[in-house]
Length: 195
Image (cartoon, rainbow, N blue to C red):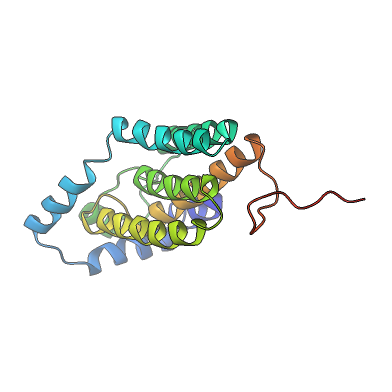
């Protein structure tokens, strides 16, 4: 999914024009943009490490330390991957009329989206089964609000955010598998072994 988003929205003139058009539709005052940017600046490397530690601690408390460490590390690895991809993936100037207005910054995939979605996915997977729906819904809503703030503050285009979310899903599912994850059962255990 990340590759498809990149290929269409960055490497085609039509994709660049469409994403630029969505940015140009939004009108936010400079004061509102500054407030949103200030809010987003709280997502520092220290905060990311605290998020990873929270996931690890929940895993330890639930007797699933390996899973907690794996999911916590997945959050950090996902963010590192996003930053590397931003530096490596080229963004040619294919929408010359609107790129000058919107900006040509290499911002795909969004690290902000990776942080938010990875944290919610990690919390959901490591938590007790009775808490999973609540964490997924409430955490997902908060993640969407933060990603919307990143869009309105002109930090990212919509495809940047979608690519970041797709990257975090891939990394966190891999981390869950490395941590010993199996089929999620609504009772919290593994399904019974076949006889």
